[in-house]
Length: 150
Length: 156
Image (cartoon, rainbow over all chains, first blue to last red):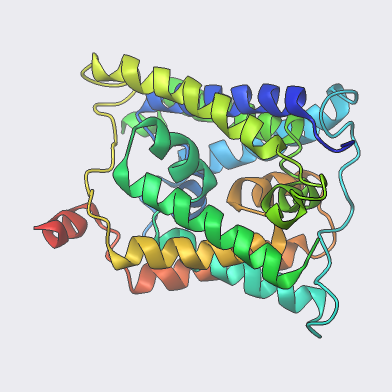
C-alpha cells in the first residue's frame, strides 16, 4: 500500500504530542484547536495567546513545507480540497460549507475535536473525551462510507 | 495579566509551531489521506491507510506523560493553575456535538487543526470551510452555556 506512511505519521504525532505537553506544562492550557479557534469570537477573554498559537501553527506548516521538503508531505500539498462526491448533485463549495458549519457547531457544543478530545482528553483519561472520540470517529467513518467521497 | 507576559506567549508560540509542523510532517493537512483512514470500507481490498492511528497514538502517549508530571505540581510554569475541564457529565450535548462534528469531518476530511494550518497553502475553497466553521462555532456558542460557572451549576 503506497500511501501508508507510519514513520512520518509517528514523527508528526510526536510533534503534536510535544506541542500539547508544552502548552499544558507551560500555560496549563489544553491544546484543543477547536477551542483555541472557537474562542476567538466573543466572549474572547484570552484573545492574544490564541492568536499567537494559531499564527505560529500556520507559520510552522509554511516553514516545514520549505525546510523539510523530503519529510512528510514533501512540499506537495494539494492545491484543492477533496471535491464533493459525484452523484449527490451538490457543488463542492456548498458541500464544504455544510461540512464547515457542522464542524464548527459540533466542536462547540461537544467541547472539542480531534486534538482537544482525541489527544489531550484521552491522555487525561477523561470519560467525556472517550465517548466523544468513539462517537466522532464512528460517525466520520460512517459518513465516508455513505457519501463515497473517496 | 499572566497571559500577556512574554514566557506565556512564547510557550503558546512554541506549542502552536510544534503543532503546525506535526500536522504537516504527519500529512494530516492532506484531506484525502485523512479520508483514506476514515474509509474503513477499503479494509477488505487492502486500500485502507492506517497512518492516522500512527499519528494519534504517540501524541496521546507523550501528552499522557505530561499529564502525569502535572499531577505532582501545583501550577504550570507560567500561569496560576492548570485549566482542566471540571465538567464530567456525559450528556446529550457532548454526544450530539460529536455526531455533528463526525459528519462534518467525514464530509471534508478536515478537522479544525488541519483547516487552520492549511492557511499556509491556501487551497481553493479553504476560506469557505474556515468561514463556515467560524460561523458554526459562534452559532453553537449561542445555545450552549460555555461559561465555566454555568457548566458547573448545570452539573449539580
